[in-house]
Length: 402
Image (cartoon, rainbow, N blue to C red; front, side, top):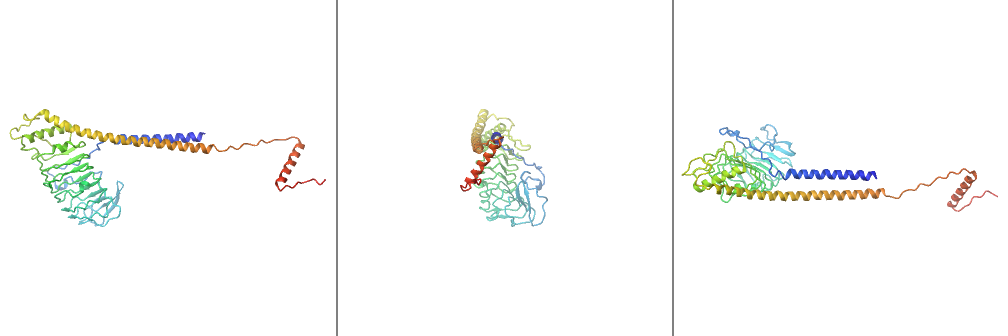
């Protein structure tokens, strides 16, 4: 019986370790609902163009060595992905690549157009660098088939609009679009994505910022643009936002506002203080209007209580939705844990039943050995044994000849 108990102890130990691992994973995922935002490196305000931030953070970079003018791309496994480094080779299009490439660096080339069939053979792409090219046109269907794409860098090109379908990609987490020629966007366009966590729109000559639903957004960079106001209502719906980079826009943002807009500026400042947002390096917002140019926390013409209450209500609704989402996640994890425990118990019971049946087979009884000391009894037993063998051998009886 030692074997079944040993097996039971082993099974229960394995089940306990599995449950602890699942619970630990759930505890790590649910409370940390907001993943850590990766701040981008800051560039000097008057630095050279090459010092501007255009590459993704180091956690997503390809690190495949210094670029060369060789037209042959370099292949290497990076973070578990098959990566192709085709940067700085004077290419006007994507060359023929090996199958299964998941990360592609085409930065610092001479691409002008991204056609519909450009990525037809690269359906598994997860990371794509197209920054520092001369791209003016991305055809409507060029990015439609990149269902696994998570990071794309289109910074430093000549694009005047966001490529069609880009924000609808189901796994897109990071979009780098700095230093393009967006200006005033098409009417009806909004930045909206259910998965986007980082949106980099620095130096795009933006005049307005149409924001839609961005529930996962952590980092929004609109520095060095010409915005005069911010969509307060849309920003308040972003519960997870940690960094809102407004640096180097002090000459345009919230300047020459009328009275209603000035009060909206105060609402924005109250919301920023409530959320503890990072507004970028050396960013200082002053709310003024034509009749009041004083740098005051609240202008006399604005209702201080109303402003604070509005910001608090918007933030409260946002936090409530986030908590409901976390509770739904918790319920899902508990269902998984209960299923794992139940499955482990059932498996253990089946194994124990099998072990018990295996050890409960028919027992072999020992035949007692009789030791006879009387020679006559020994001879009689031998004769009887011989007769028995004779009968078993065909019924013949052996006589002594008398």
